[in-house]
Length: 458
Ligand code: PMP
Image 1 (cartoon, rainbow, N blue to C red):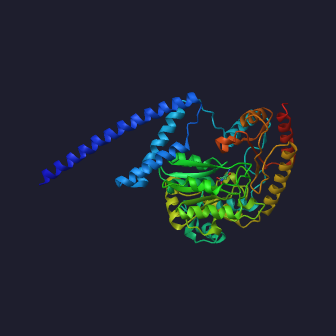
Image 2 (image 1 turned 30 degrees about the vertical axis):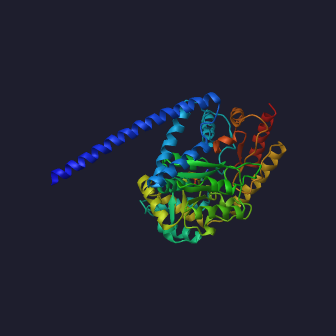
Image 3 (image 1 turned 90 degrees about the horizontal axis):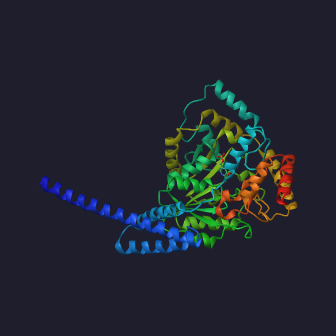
């Protein structure tokens, strides 16, 4: 009896081996075809990515799955892995324009500084004003009281309580993270599987796409334009959602455009997420720097929202590496697993410092950035560059009259001024640059005068 059963098992296993080998051979055949398609596209000068063709094949696979009784979600997840591979082999054969981000420029600028050159930093969103004095006090108190141990992965109770109270949620809906960046990472790593999709709205801070790529998920990009005032088109967004979509990532006030979307558009995005049961990752690290009324995702009471916040911008605490996420208890629990695996917990003294910062009035910082942004906007207007006046955040994102971003960025860097290339926020924005309002008016004026001369060819 047992012998017979084992034989049956072995025979089934053999069939599976044969089938797996056939599938692999077919996959290899498909990859080779994709490479050939890439060659033809290269000759014709066509983009590697073609959303229309992808959509056709997706529909075909969805129909086939329905007919055969295969789980549609699984079929589409497999397809996405194949599509990803095709894109990869097609891109391999192409001369790629290296994507430079604001961080790449920042690193270069720092290196030049180390070599003794003076640089005016208009490329990063890092405030030049200090963190609240109470932060330093809390740090030394933390040392004196020996409060420097592992903490609960989600954070120390006092900070969780203060943050949940501020957000109007329960304690178990908050997790303290090493910067808003890690809140973004843990949300994507915890909630999106390989082959699934996230939608980003570009221009965008590159981390959403980078995290998605890192976990093997696909990014679908909704492009916005300066002409539309950087407002996302809701019907376009709706048309991008399919069975594989898991998350929409939004960021208002926006980095790099400074845009805050109107209530109706925000409600529309939340409604789409709700209708399709999608996570809504709302990066609100600039919420305190909004100069128009801003309603975050929490005010929409959507239980699949993950709101990302940070101490970096409001309290000028970038180097402390502390931020937090607010979401459903279930999502937080999943994100906490990622955090536990990666870092155990945020440093306790840093959490205590953040708690001290939380009690401080940051309106002086906000007023200062508002004033600086107005100054920056007026200077960019003087250069006759086109841009949408920012509603918040710390940046102006103007369009260049001619040429590409990196030409100007590199030319300016040689002259001691660092600005960020627009293409770091999306491939379609090579005609844009991002200028940050994190320096004094004097420094900005000096840097912008050099930029104005460079634009005139000097
Ligand atoms: N989100 C956005 C949109 C940002 O611009 C930044 C910082 N540049 C962050 C999140 C992360 O900031 P941090 O990790 O310092 O909290």
